[in-house]
Length: 287
Image (cartoon, rainbow, N blue to C red; front, side, top):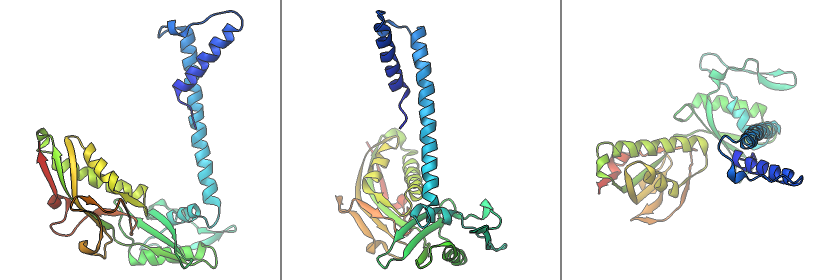
């Protein structure tokens, strides 16, 4: 991991003092001005070494990613292959052998519709591949799912059952009292709701197929400018086929019942049921 400029600078200064001291020359860095020649030399070297180490970290991360994607059958390999899946409703995409590899004859990024992918093994030994397209994320159409299923069946490991899964987004309902500085009364509701939706959008991409944490929601609302505090009375997460009543009750009566929710569809958005949107359920109280 790359060292900071300050860390390297301190090492340079320490080595400089020790080296000069070994030949009887005393150097006191505490007396250096901002334009001291020795200080500038030590600092310039530190900047160069820190940048070099940062580039090394980036290069190592790239090599690690390439290696992970090149190991056939691994999670990274499957994700990489799904991101390379191509679909067009008017220009069918066919796989052909390019050398010894089964690939698209022409690579067209405009046809690479999958923007989020999560790999999960089932108890039956099958591999479930959850995917979504576009930004913000939405489910694939039936024709796109069929095409993606055929694609992975052709390039996947023989003997392994792959299931392409793409469903409508999960939903979250938050009923809360939000206490805020009265000077923000004209914008507080708009800003809080915008920040929650932004968080959900980023979470759905960065942690696709993962968990939504209750602590993150509370922390997020508290960090919105003008918000003093938040008290969540009820919070429910559900998959699209469920009703709010049958969803996962994470908070009820201000009591925390669950600390996390694993996104069933892989991504989650604001509740869409009438009278349960953020506008309906978030109460803003000036103080």
